[in-house]
Image (spheres, rainbow over the protein chains, first blue to last red):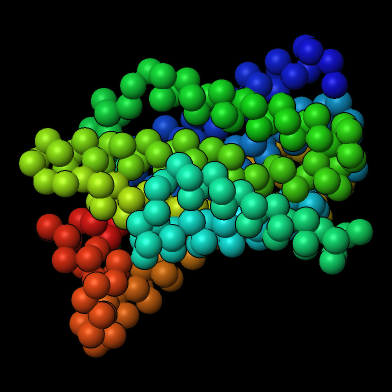
Length: 115
Length: 170
């Protein structure tokens, strides 16, 4: 990946993610606003650029794996939510350490379904 | 619970908080592209649903809730964690919509116009996420009415129930 492409991804991804995050800020109640924390912002930015550069078949393959990443996100979100509500663990530590849960689920599903 | 547009939250966020989200979002998009190049689209695709922005969002929510409560001379630590937890639960519901988004793109992108597929998939994300949220609200209301939480006064759920003006369980 060349520097130009990385910069383009940073700018496009940053704009789309920020837009969805700001929309989430404006909405109440919080659980509803939370839906926007899992908006397809990174996916939209990436898929548009990928289709332009690599073609539709490549982007479609990425989307198939994304299904597994999304299910891992469901587990991650529930896990984090449960720890914060029930055990009241530190927010930044919990949300960061729980990435392990996402990795285990995502790659576990990938090994089981795609590989 | 009624869905509302509340612009008062806009003033709470500082410029560097917006910058932080921009950088997180940009970094994840760039890293997803680099991983796809290095390891192929099968691995790279997983990262299109990586929850990278959540720690930043949850931390900001905790901070804002804490500040709100401290201004009202109450401890905001617990409230901040609960709000961040509720937000994460909401994100997990949104992630179910993300799976539907990806399913539509996977199935329809090769034979259809890109713009149309992404628009339909985004709409499907929204409809799925809101439907799951609505179903969960209805179930939650029923559970709250049952005697289970009355017999568990220390649970997080009962704390949410006792919040002033009934706003904490949001």
